[in-house]
Image (cartoon, rainbow, N blue to C red):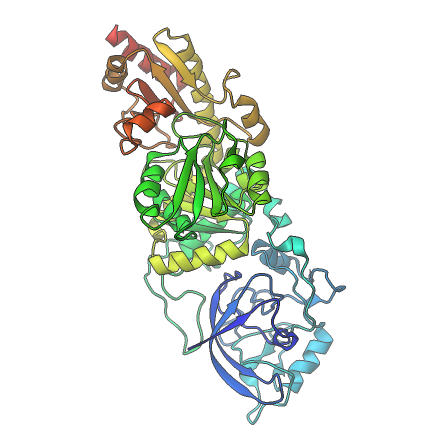
Length: 564
């Protein structure tokens, strides 16, 4: 099968086409099987292959819902009128405008309805006003040869004519967040996303259905419901991706089986000889991946303190990205995201931010200049310690296309059941984050008053070095804190003697958890590196849950007294 690529540098006639988008989730970089008939130079050429839409090509072919007359009523059809050269298309129907904006589709221009109608009729397609004023039923084309036309290809449903190729503004290479992404407040988006569903469920179910299916039936050859195989796409996973994308204000979000699967996929964007600057104080699993897998694949790393060292001085000709957590795990250092983004972009680098600790409820790195945001969805997004998940949210269609190819090829997408659990968990994210933060602040103040606690690391405390930066770039301080005790014996005693608070790995759930980084989250980090970061046998990490804070403090008090 041939590969046909459409880029902004392609000949002008390639844009004067009926463009066919087979799936409901359009993105640049998507590979779309098509059957095309070209007539660019007067000689018809049959073409069967893959149409690769590359970044910022003004293609059309907007399918709203599933507009195939043989399947059922078309819910919405959009008409776009031409604007001035270099401008954006104007959508005439509000619902279609939201659909386009959510997917970051820009520079769409088609002919007006009257002219399009005449062109369709010239091509032999029948105008069918009973379906919709703007719909042409391609299934009722009269028999016989097709009339001569500038260029086109067969389509099984409504498609539109690109009348004019627009100049693409240089500043549009990095997609801005569509305005519609901010129509709802954060709490509303946690429940509804941007109001768009991956599929329309005819039952009216309030809880989005679990589509527990590995594969999907096709009506006939060349036709699809928009879903083919669940490794590629699944409606429940797509809905979880839409909601997380709305929360982070991204162009696209991808749901993975775990947070580490998400980070592993991002590392596949890089190759042998590439160099990445990373925060030294990272989750131990990330460090393990970088040191044992990524380095084996030829990627090199500089592990530094991004909050205190000069990041720019570590940039080399081979540097491709900066990878940070903020706050860091477990020592709660805070890095200025906007400042780091400015440095990264000045040198043509990607900024990757693991936003797990604050969640999109409190912090949105893309709005501060980051290119990629990562979440362990297991933590705050899921919120109930009952599922594993990971998310990558991106700021551009170019990165989205690469990651979509990776997730499809590697097969690391989130399962339907786990996708549903994440959707359910996110609905209560605002109330959980606020309550957990309240508890964290109360616990941090209690720990400050305990003489056997030597240090408390929590950005919400005014004395924390990153307090003011966190106030500037986030809407809260979160519910994670770390504290150092006077001895290893005391640390182990507290882990043994708490009655309410479990000693367990993980974080971000409704239950408060105590973790011992040296034997759990950071066990695979070399001892000398741990010590240099302050992660020693006296350090405990606490993830505050949503219990009554008086009960949590009472439990910690009795654990301290037990040792005394």
